[in-house]
Every structure is written in structure tokens, then in C-alpha cells.
Image (tube, rainbow, N blue to C red; front, side):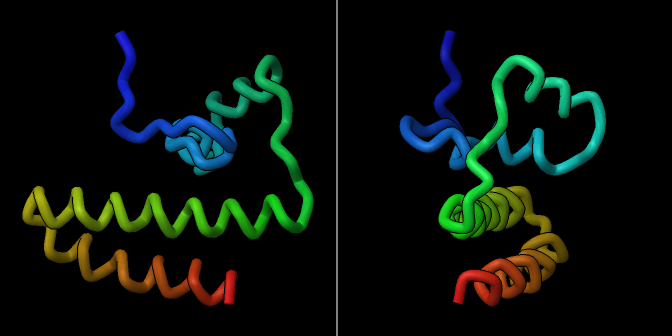
Length: 87
């Protein structure tokens, strides 16, 4: 069975799973032992910010769907921070 809810074909850094692995320094970091490291170039860093904006948009929609008004409000600050990094 495949779950394509937040998965895309293409740049691995765009994948939701990679975002979640990068979110915390815990046991998830063990993924890099076998997966290999991501591109750390300046261009790749810029793309990761664009992917983060896309993920934050999806998170905002999910929070709205769940009636999480405070979470929706908080998402605007998170999005503003990401967008200021790519401008």
C-alpha cells in the first residue's frame, strides 16, 4: 500500500517525510545513515524554504479543517518567517 497524501515525485527534500525527519534531532535522524545526506547547497536551501511554505499551507488547511482557529492564526507567523527568508 502506498500513501501519497504528502508525497511527491522529484526532489526528496520536498517530501513531507523528509521535513518531519529534519524537524527534530531525535531517533528520526538515523534515516540519514542509510538514506544519505541532502544537498546542502545554497540553491537547495532556497528550495527547502519554498517546500516549507508549501507544507505550511497544507498544515494551515488541515488546522482549518479540524477547527483549530488558534493553529490557523499561528500559521501566518510561521509562513511570514519562511517567506521573508526567500525574498
